[in-house]
Image (cartoon, rainbow, N blue to C red; front, side, top):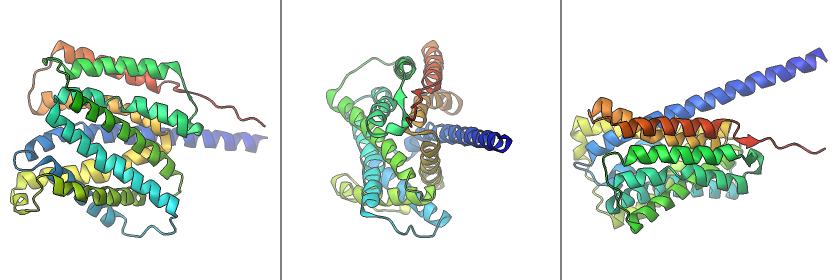
Length: 314
């Protein structure tokens, strides 16, 4: 009996450590993703959005191949379809639709609408991931509070302007990220190394991205990378925001689940505001302060006892 209780205690300690690692991985990911706008803003001086997207993921794929050069063996057709679907939704279409949406509507609109992704993830998880349990009311309350905060942050000092085309594209991008989160949760159950699975997802994402290069103003000219400022920003986006962050995000999804990880997306506008104030010296208004508090409160509400435990019937 004592040995059995000791094993149970050890398993519970391991679960707590795994969850702590998952939360830290999600926080690291969101911290980096929340600051990528600065690098993107610099690169947009001489690069098209599709060029930035393509080059950063190629760098990311090369970094992952160097970090884990061994091949992934023994995959089935069903598994390859899951990898391809994740690459199409989370790497190719999500970023393309987000960039196209920015040409039609305000960045603040896109920021708010993209933050709906955790809500979509919760709904899809309830439908397709039965093992994650039933969503509780606090998830939806937290979502509403966080969205109110994100709205204050995004529209601080800006007038609300609706554009159906851009806003719908942003909404579709948020839905696609939710699909990606569900797919990575499924992929985590295959038992492969996280770096290997992320590398395979990147490969398919870049593959699906190639046709889009011919539709947009893409130039393969690499002489622009001779500028050290551009090179350093691409390395940050490729090595940090892509190679590292997609691995840590998928790792977090594996440990915490798709929904609990996705609610950290609420923090992106908060990190962006902090970076704007510290790096670009942009003003910090009462609306951004109140929005930050609401967003953090929504995150805590959504994270606290998010699911009802599913009792196993014997």
